[in-house]
Image (cartoon, rainbow, N blue to C red; front, side, top):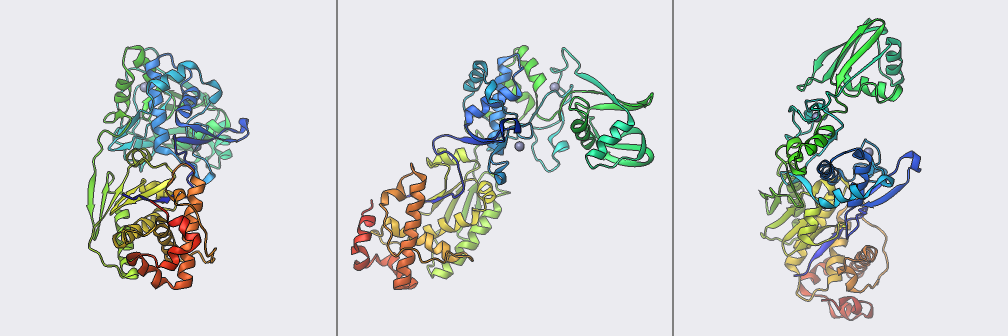
Length: 498
Ligand SMILES: [Zn+2]
Ligand SMILES: [Zn+2]
């Protein structure tokens, strides 16, 4: 069966292997480099877990780092790369990769932590201090039941992970001011007035001449930036004013959500495997190369069925598709009751595994079946509607096409109709005849050549529409191309398709 595709413009994914564009730190000149996935995971282990003592803990971190990347790919897309090299995303230190780290990555090659058909949000923190934090406490909109509060006896087994820090009220007020935050005049005391369910400080009351409410996170970041990151290591603390200073006594380090690095290393020392470590810190998830709990849900619509693993977020897709189908049925006058089936893959890997298409292919159509990259990825590139329009037009053209209709005409017609259908529309007339071998439309090795072939096919159909009229061109879909178009020397090369 002939397969028709949409090229995803702007996607820079390597067709052979997943790779990430990483912006190095200012020390390394803010350069953006491309790292194949497994090399990126090794570099994250070097940046985030270089001090680990135990290999099973390194393997658990490798799976967490790989999963985080799979889930958060394109986090900095608007800036032209996927990830920064700091703890904002994951710390990367490509120069500190060792054989031991590489072995931990290889031992878990391609393995990802799954939850309901999607890579989990596999966040981690230095040390939870005995009690992990809920994901919701840090990211209120997050729905990730595997990021929950639970006690962690492992990280405090050898060392209670306690710390103290104290500063003068003037020092603290100055740090707040430097971060643009309010502090009462002549700050005297700080009190915790609200805590999260794990007992971490959430809201603080600052008292002096007047009172100010402040989130604990804001105070921690302000002190970190101004005085140093070893001041308040976590929000898990008690605070009191004493002897002209404000003293914090706390435990743990970092936000405490997800995998506790100190605890994971200790679990490995106690003989737990990396899978057991991951199951302890991300309860309810499963480890595998593909999603285990792969389950398709069918959303039925008007002439459209959407198969999805994320029925809630993909409802939008269904309504856009229904609307496009209606619109183009009436524009083209091609009534058909045939249902169009759209399969929306939950992630890029499952799309690629199932279709064999490279990542720069947004979707493909085969008969009345459309295979689609994850709608949220397409949406974030502003390409969802355009991709759906293209593929739905393909289904319609295919349902009406005469058997001998050449590939360049099918592709060119759909591209041209899509362009006409867009408000902006491409207005240039283009070349009347542009030829390109049909091989360029069907091959997947050279992306540039494929793009040029698509453009050439569109320009050619646009030229035919200009010369013969749009109605005539549409009639050729069912009747086949007239002899004079078929026999023109420029087109003969292109019509010689499979
Ligand atoms: Zn970042
Ligand atoms: Zn812990």
